[in-house]
Image (cartoon, rainbow, N blue to C red; front, side, top):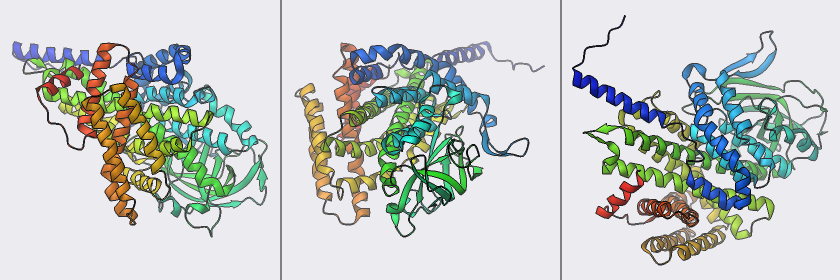
Length: 595
């Protein structure tokens, strides 16, 4: 029998009090992530309209509660070291299955996300992007959970099929992609990366050749894929979108097509019912998103179907797949930031130091205020893009709007990842030593998942280099700045004459001049190097403008005052060229935001 060491009565009482405060902190980790998020509700009311918001309100509230209970519990269990996915290439009877064995908690997460959340099924309804991404944002409060990366990939498959797939492929696969029945669903993956390629996709060498046995099938051309893909997330996916080189003599991205590779050869096709011709070499031992299997995969004559004309494959991949994934990524990390704030706020309210809750200390208040400002600004910008995506798929966007959307989607993906990283680190710092303990909170897992988000779908440097091309050779700068200026005018009218409005207008003018000055730079590497701080500030300006428009819809005076104060903190830290120095009034504002 282990005996509890004797402690002096005062020390024992202090330890008991500390444990009681930690248990109270833990009890706070079960919120309804929707009903507690007034900003999300406000954004959805604007995006969906009063009638649309009311129609979906019950579902959002139900799913918000499930995320905070069933899904959160299952995600924690699924991410324990003994429960991570394992490669299973052969069945018990020696059949090649190229599969992955998952812990039962993986399917608990999946049923919550796909069935209760309808995160993919929502794509088949009106306002598909706004509603689907809002549900995805809620599910992402628990981290990647083994499924949220596949959700984003599946959305890309849906959009690629809808935009460029043959009628036969759409009829065959779209119903299974959009079903809310978890066991019957088809999920997607996107395999772009090769060991020599990475961000330099033009070096990809996996080869596609027309299938001599059946060059035409399912309303498109049928191909055979041979080669190695280096980083294949959701390795057990039913449907794989991948790039392959259809024309050996065409260099760079012009020779890449986009192909759909089914895990099992479909009905109506030669070889129907057989496992396709690929081998999972090994699973990746990743820093984050560990409960979602990523693999190296060899393709040995795998049957594939062209998505649209092969010569348009790279364009379809970028506009329908990668751009979609970048928007999903932005929502995921916005959720990471909010979850980090909720954990840190709760801890700060319950944890005592020097006889007082640590939320009373100004430096802790500053961490919490910055954490709030980062998360809310990221969500406002991400939702603005989701609304634009819905508009693009219904009425279409103007040239200026399309230029803005393309540049802003890339800048938002880059900057929201940086901001959520900072927000999670603010949370970890608030918890002190406890912040580094895996069993104490999900913050260590969130920071690891966030790091993976930062590097998927374009690293920060890759996105800045693309922004240089978009604003320069692609000629998108006039349209981008015209739309950004319209946002600025809307915000200026809403705020009226004030210091914040002046700071935003000044930043817009300075950034326009800075980008124009780079237009004469002929060295793309030097241009990217010089653009980097301006690109980050451009994103921050967009975040501030989107958030200001969002706040203008807030009718409750106290909440509007608090959010304007948080916006002011964000502008002071990230938008002004000359940072404001803290004063007594600033400390009072920060103290209010920490609550």
